Length: 90
Image 1 (cartoon, helix red, strand yellow):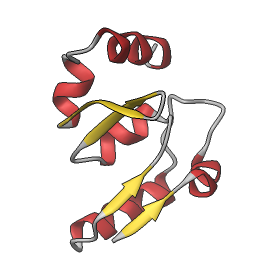
Image 2 (spheres, one colour):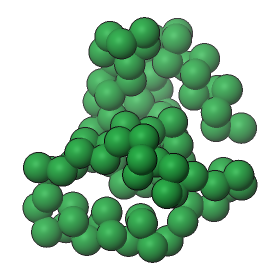
Image 3 (tube, rainbow, N blue to C red):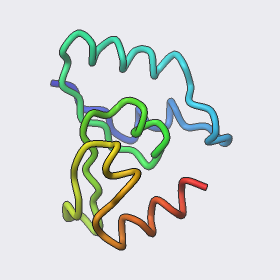
Image 4 (cartoon, rainbow, N blue to C red):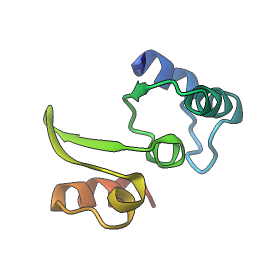
């Protein structure tokens, strides 16, 4: 079990959100492929969409929605989730 928090987030943060940094992403893929369970707290939705097999959307500290990335990013159930994703995935 592996938890990645804001310190890791700063290591992968980019001003140009259209590019996902390859080295950290490759490390996460390798850990995932090796069966490592990870929890990653991030606002980098492109990054989360690519590496996650489950996404949890929290609103004011409460789980508002959770599911597979494909569903969360393409058809979120809650309006607040839709608003957030629309604001960060332009």
